[in-house]
Amino acid sequence: MKHLICTLALLLLGSAGLCAHGHHQAPLKSPAVDALKQGDFQRAAQLLPGEIKANPNEARLKKIYAALKTQMRREKLFAEEKDPGMIVLVGNEMRKFYTAWGLYDKAAAVGAKIYAASPSLQNGVSWGVSLLNADKNTEAAAVFGKLDLSKADPGPSLCGALAFARVGKKDESRKILDRFDTGKLSLNFLGLYARSAALNGDSDKAAELAAKILEKSPAKQHPNLKKHLFGSADFKSVAGNEKFKAALKTASKVEDECAGCPNHGTDKCDHKHGH
Image (cartoon, rainbow, N blue to C red; front, side, top):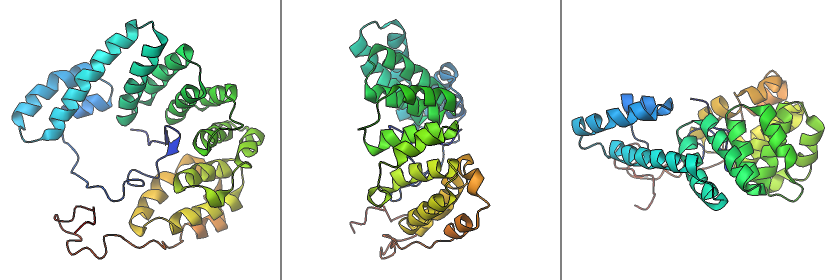
C-alpha cells in the first residue's frame, strides 16, 4: 500500500504521527481484508461472512463487512446518479472509504466526477489531494493549476505547492510557500512545507523544518517520521546534505505523556491519561 501523503489537505506524519495516544491493535490476518486492500470488493464480500463465523469475537471484521456493504451500495447509486448534490454527497463518502483503504486511484476517479458536478475550491482540492496520494503528480498539478489558491488556507495551499514542486514548477511552488510564516504552522503543515522545500532545492529550509518537526514530536514518533516522511522520495535530493543529516539527529523536546502513567508499558494503559 502506498503511504498516505494528504487527506483532506492534511499531511499524515507517518502512520502513528497524528494518533500518538491511540490504542494499537494487532493487524488483522484476513484474506478478506487483503482482498479489500487490493480493491477486490466482491471477493472480500464473499469471504467476510465465513471469517466472521470463524472469529465471532472479532468485532473489527463485523465493522468492516458492514462498511463494505454500504460502500458497494454507494458505488451502484453513484454510477447512476445525475443530481449534482447527490453526486457530491455520496461521492465524498465513497472517497473517504477508498482513502482509508489506500485505494487512491479509485478516490481520484470519484474526485473527478465530484468536481465535474460541482467545481468548487473544496472539491478541486480534494480531487488534487487524491491524485497526489496516487502519485499522479502531473494530473494533480493540472488540477491545482485550475484553482485560485491565493486566499486559501494553509492545507489546500501547501498541497498545491507540493503538486507543483513534484513536477518541477519551482516558481509556482515557492510563490505559495512564501505566503506562509513557518513559525505559525502546525506540524502537519510544516511537513508539507518541508517536502516542497526539499523538492525545490532549498536544503537549508528543509533541514530547518526537519529539526523543528523532530523537536516538537515525541521521541517514540521519530523512527516513523524518519522512515515515512524524511525518508520519502520528496527528500531524496537533500538526503545527502550535511545540514539535513544533522537535522535528523535532533532530539525531542516533548515530554512523553505516558511516562508518568502507573500502567505505562502494560496492557492496562489506555493512553487516555485519565488515571
